[in-house]
Structures are given as C-alpha cells and as structure tokens.
Length: 139
Image 1 (tube, rainbow, N blue to C red):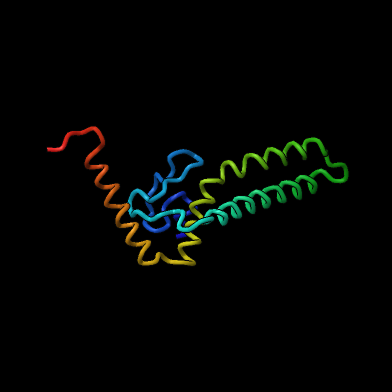
Image 2: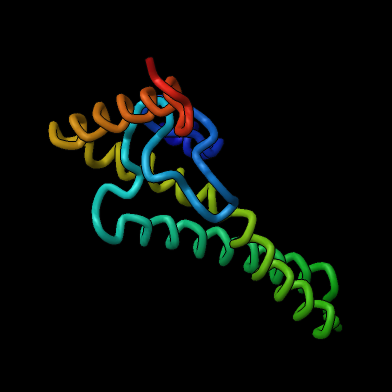
C-alpha cells in the first residue's frame, strides 16, 4: 500500500490518474471507488508528511551547506537555498503526501462495511458515466 501511495496511486487497487490537477485529488478512486477523504480532517496527516519531508530536506541542506563551507559559511546563499527548498519541496510533494497518507490511513484502519458499500456505489456510478457520457442519447 505504501509503495502505491509513493507513486501517487490508489493504495487499495493501484490505479493511477487520481488527480484532476496537481493540487486536487478525485473524491473517489476511478477504478475501485474508494473515498480518499474518509473522514473529516483526514488529510491533516498528509500535511504532516509534507511538512516533515520539507523539514528533513531543509535540515540536510543546512547541515551539508555548513559542513562544506566552514569556517566561513555564506549566509545569503544559504538563506536563498533554504527559501527555495521551502517552496519547492512542499509544492512537488503535495500530491505524494496525500496518497501516502491515504495508504497509511488505510493500513491503520481498513475500510468499514459502509465504506466498502460506498466504494461499490461510486464504482458503479463511474462505470455508468463512462458508458453513458452526458449529452448522448440513449435508446
């Protein structure tokens, strides 16, 4: 499950194409129908993962930067590099953190019967919409 999440895939079935935009995840998996935001505040864990990865990248940058430039570290370039990392890492890591957290959450708390029923309903609805696109006449 975690490996699937690290590749921005559904932790339940491994399907891709979970995001409509870089920052917007689908409500349900397009293949298995699993709801990604299973309860209110689910993605606080995803935000934690994103912040933790950013902090690790910043710490590594600062430690390596200071270690390589001692005894006279260049403060200006270090600050610019830290700001760059503080913007780049969370932006690039955002969708990965969501799917990684969905995998962690699913591993810690498997789907309840009601959630499985909701997934089946969503899967049926998605299949119906693929077979009967809006605007086509049915006979």
